[in-house]
Image (cartoon, rainbow, N blue to C red; front, side, top):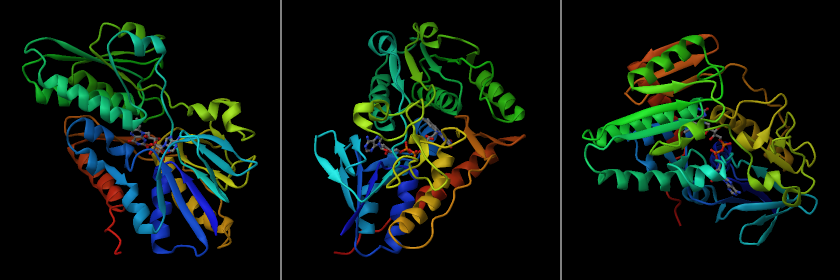
Length: 372
Ligand SMILES: Cc1cc2nc3c(=O)[nH]c(=O)nc-3n(C[C@H](O)[C@H](O)[C@H](O)COP(=O)(O)OP(=O)(O)OC[C@H]3O[C@@H](n4cnc5c(N)ncnc54)[C@H](O)[C@@H]3O)c2cc1C
């Protein structure tokens, strides 16, 4: 029996499991390792922060998906890779052998230690499991906050995650406690808000921030220092590689980029170890792609095809990333902004469109329990 090991409950692995459910490959044991069974779909995280969705509604249940696919879900966290010996170490110290490994582990954020130690309450937007705990604890404290006391929420990071999460958190806090005045600030190192988006979308985003009473500070070198007097700090700077990817002793000879992301070829295989595939945020495509869920999702069909090819079924395909893709950003007020290439739009209808697309995506992974 050969073993296909999926590390990480990312967007592409959900598609691999769905495919396996329809057509398992005889003689192959499928194992998925991830710390939690519920993995949130990133596109719906701002809607959850704003209180529009329950966490359960935005998450794929990988334990159920594995059960339905006849795969084994192993609760755990990958901590090291020994690619020459084809084995993975978990944080428990246990080693897992594989014939074929696929990495869909996402990325992380490391707020500077001094920010985490002193200063305002901190919510890093990644990893999402820690965000859930931190946010639920914040909402509990918020329920009993003294009436009338001003509260300031600052976000560091002027990309989609910082923009959407700040507006979502402000909307939620204001709705829950209209008796507490809540202010918002957004700090970004870039001179532009939402770099790379259509000019219309950038202007609409700046307007949405103004309407929500957010003070926008662009071109700021040290947003954390300026946000020190805030009550809550949302940390949403650029995606970073996991610790084991950055540590040569833990990743071994696996080829990674300067930032620690796994270098892959057109077939989504490690350029150094063809038995290792990597997709989504944890992987480095050449030329570099933005760390966006849309790329992880789009890599899914090619990954599942190529994993089958590597196991002897069919021919491998080359992945072709889109140069322009649709970005839909929720503004926390029942509206959203759309951007694609040079085009943009905004309105309630954009939010309904986004909601429809996101619900459609997540619904694909709701599976009926497998009959015993
Ligand atoms: C608030 C927010 C909003 C965003 N909105 C959008 C958006 O609207 N559109 C968009 O395109 N992108 C968006 N992004 C970016 C998007 O979240 C990521 O690019 C996307 O989630 C990457 O998907 P992935 O499949 O690579 O990994 P993920 O979806 O992050 O999944 C990785 C999984 O691996 C697991 N894992 C991590 N480490 C280990 C380990 N060591 N061992 C085992 N398992 C592990 C994690 O628990 C997780 O389940 C947003 C990001 C944030 C933070």
